Length: 167
Length: 174
Image 1 (tube, rainbow over the protein chains, first blue to last red):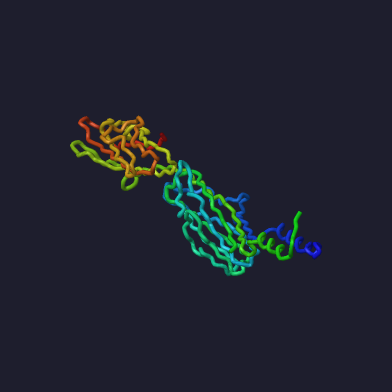
Image 2 (cartoon, each protein chain N blue to C red):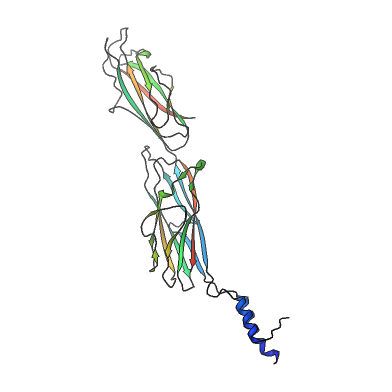
């Protein structure tokens, strides 16, 4: 048997090894619908008390658009994770339930887990399951904040992560 | 130098190097900051019970003391402790220019409903000097308290007339 007969199979093997496993690629782009340049959902300046000291404030709404695509041909899931309390001066917090969220827009027949307003809560939640073929999707998530009466003045911050996982 | 002894061994090597075909999963993550700026508000409202001015009514010799209540409401989200003070913008004076003796109008202050403390718990003459009425809780909580003003008739002769004064209620931060 001549050694030349094995040149082609070895070359093919080398090419496949070099390219690595064929991963299902998903992409996620998050933008603020309000057009904020930075990737931040800024509810602006809010009043925990009215100008005459009366309790409450008008609700403030903000929206985030999640543009998701996948090349796997299989379903994908979208998760939302609230990474920590909404904390402000001296460790004072705004209860996360003061923000209610819902997925107000979808484009495919995927499953919207939060079609109606639900309070934000710490940790991870599945918010969307794509259709069976993992079609690209544009989700608009609406957040409405209404501060508790008398909420302590100051700047409050938290972070929210969005994750897409191909199945 | 790679030496391959047979085609069968070549493809065995390939399958070992490519175990995840069809099983690998992709993920993508983005993180967004959420922020809100809560505006500081500090409001003091005071009103006479029943509205309008604090009218202590007609006072005559031998009449029992008359009392009226003013309600003071503080709404704050600043988190800063505060005091509420009172001062007379001018003495109690009649249209004819007569003054009322200071000790004829006394006042007391109740504790707050949310933990604030009265600084005038016993009857005290209403004087032009600023007086601390009330001290908030340590977090400067919103609170409500009342001031009770009492006027008594005098043993000395007071010129008849309507006596008026203007009371200023102010806040100061500790």
